[in-house]
Image 1 (cartoon, helix red, strand yellow):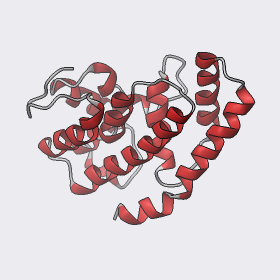
Image 2: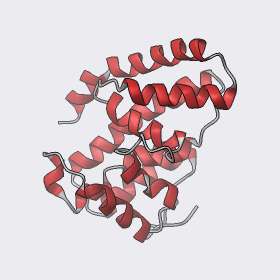
Image 3: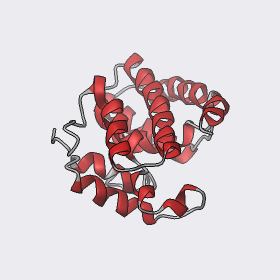
Image 4: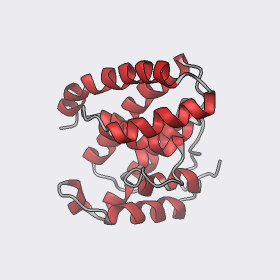
Length: 184
């Protein structure tokens, strides 16, 4: 992986969340943006745990780093911390690329909002799902895309997979109120 200006590399599983947090802070992210990224990463870790139980292989460091960094562009567009907007998406990708973050991780700044794009990877969709589940929100169309992609990849029975993953998603969403309380 490419080293950033802080001397950290985004990507190693054990340090992906911490290294992404350090980068966000070095870029001047407000504390609540850092907290948001960490709470989304917490939901992403739970998703990854559920996938590991099903022996589904994904690029976990990508998902974890993307979860922390997906809203980086809100540093440049702080009004989008409190109001809807999409200016932060491209701005975040550009900011991360300028810091030497690998392109596939930086792209989660855009793809977390455009997960229905056919070119979107499973890892990017997992970041987008974690960004909903962290606060207790279910996104059935996104969940279906993820389940269908995993079924294709693994050749698992789709309905068996659906039940297992639906239970995983619901368990993560059930903890949303607690994570929301910790986001303030």
